[in-house]
Image 1 (tube, each protein chain N blue to C red):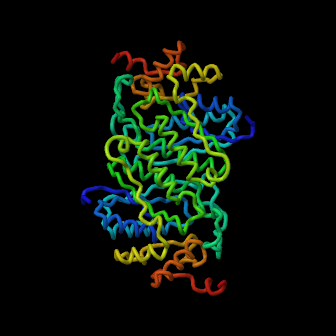
Image 2 (cartoon, rainbow over the protein chains, first blue to last red):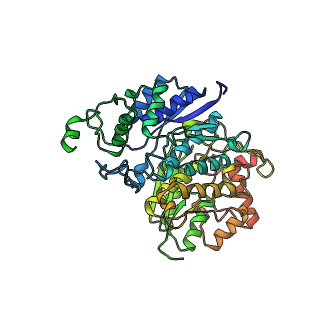
Image 3 (tube, each protein chain N blue to C red):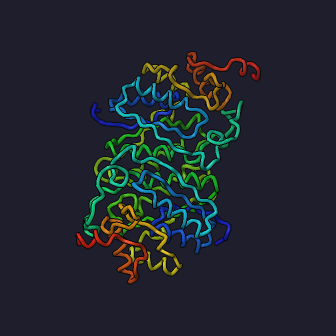
Length: 236
Length: 236
């Protein structure tokens, strides 16, 4: 691939999107990153995204402030408690941490960014295996968004098509970590926890922590971030 | 139709979206409106939307602040001059007032709102005739968004499908005004101008004013809003 093709990478500051950024770099794209401050309970994600973007020499890093709390409906953006110790591997229901239309809003902003910089490649770290409960992480959703994106924009209707690239979509969390390690990703920069302690340590019990810990365990490597040890010990 | 079905109506405060709100009311929907403060040069649109929502007894009116200026690329959201006196009927190019992915971002927020209130009907006042230069006003775009919306959300994947309703899509501006008048729409509440004077009077020369004035002329009725008369006389 040409080293001059710009791409937009949705960068949350988490493990998945950081791996995706490394993949886009490996594939020779000029890196432009987009992060969101979306009424999370904490802004550690955005801080992590800034550090990661700098580390990867991102050309342009935009941080969009959007208020998804206005509509309510998710434990991640409203006052509902984040569930702990849920059986993430066997509970097929859409989890309460699902934010309505979140990936659609994120990808729509990425599409606007892509149109302005004439980037025909948008990378997103969705994963159909570990997040089977989220409708907007499935391949058929991504294909439908891509089809819509090509009809929605001047960029898409004139010239080569826009692609929504999902290099992680079929990978397990352990596979993602193995891929990232093959690309020398430093996972100590990343943050995943839905409900970290004031110290910044991850809770170890929310869905995101469970998936992350199981992934590192499956990949046979240690997770370099800090966890709240006492709380995990008290409940496990 | 049942009088209990909720709908989300994208309400800009303009002529088209106000007509759409009246159509949704006629069709028996419970009205929920969504407006955007998106870095316009003025906030008259949002003020108009508030007045119109109150007038129609909207149950819930959300105003989302989003910053589309961050990406640049449009005369409506950046420092590029709004074109005046363009031949809107015969210039097929995408106009500079086109905001990248705007309708996609607007519809994505509407989808989030719809999911939270379980509304399966989203109304948007897009129009394929008068805005032929905007890719995101075409029927094929709307169908692609609808398809994506049904794959994106819990609401869309469980039960009856979500519909993106575009009652104006095939109408001329004159037809829209005739429809609105048949529904007793008071167009003095609406605002269309891309570049109004400090007094609030419409410029009469931007694309939006030209289309509006031609529409009222075609419908054979007077536009009840005020225009900057001196400026129009000076250049016409």
